[in-house]
Image 1 (cartoon, helix red, strand yellow):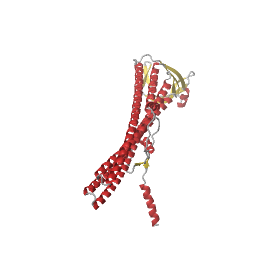
Image 2 (image 1 turned 90 degrees about the horizontal axis):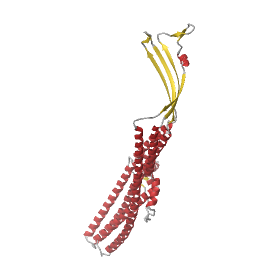
Image 3 (image 1 turned 60 degrees about the vertical axis):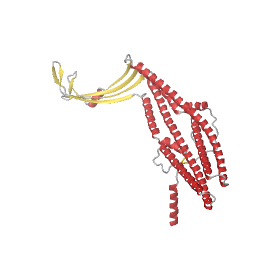
Image 4 (image 1 turned 135 degrees about the vertical axis):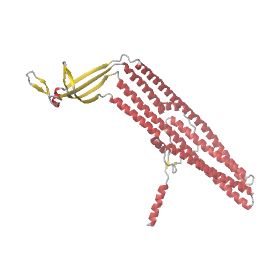
Length: 448
């Protein structure tokens, strides 16, 4: 029984200590779902959706009902004198009205609101794209820092071997004590570099957690991605990428929708120049009660006429009505004309915004293309540097082993090689990110 409990507890501890590693896709999906800026803009779109529903509801008639009660006490004039007039009255009415004609104002308002809804959706997509690019850049930075840790670990391993060899040769008296001291110092420096690289990994992971807006960050980690050692150059031209970007980037689509919305708003404003025809129907009845008497008069035969009760009067006084009203605008101080001019100015602003967005996209694509070309050239040159420094390190090791060079020469060669390895890793990840960014504008989703 104790063995079973021990196994269960051991497996539980393994399950607890198992650390989830996030992929780039998981990071992007989580960020665009939980980012507060995205959520805020989704609420803004919901407001636009409600505006569209309200615009469509305006096709329906407006129906209202009213019930009123009035009580009055006191004298009322009657001929040359006055008489007591205490009275209670009640009335009930039900009416409906509908817009018959206003030069298509309702249709134009609905169309304008539909464009606003489109623009709001594109705004959400724009924010998601921005967050995705930030996530991808930080993710690649984390992978780069992990790669540098591997390089540092290899450097520590080599420095440890150098120290172990120097310790033996110093003990047997073939090398001076200064050689051992230098080997020990070189090992300490490499361990320090490794610790710095490990801290940089933690910093980049912490920065990624903040982008994701996670509450816990200590156990966060990302998947290791196999980055190819050999990278191919980018063959797409700027013109090809721009053509796709202009057709797909949401910030441009949002600006285009807002131009259509501004143009539709101008048409809505122009309807104020036209007459408005409204139809209405209604039914109603009323009840009167003289509080001082229940006699209303005498009929033609001399009989006293008594007040009828509530339902009787409602039946006798029931009435219906229907009406058509035409409102013709003649002069409103030129306000409608000024409103149309303002709408046209808003059209010009929306068109300028579109040009600004296209310019921004063009500059981003051109910069991405420049970075791709530049980073690829840097990558090629850093690879050549890495090869030459590796060869120099091999020669330095052999020369030191043969007693023809000092440990200082080996340390310099090893540092040069470690720096070259770091430069290759830096150039590789810079090229990958610039290439992913360019492909993103070309319509290719982010992935590793």
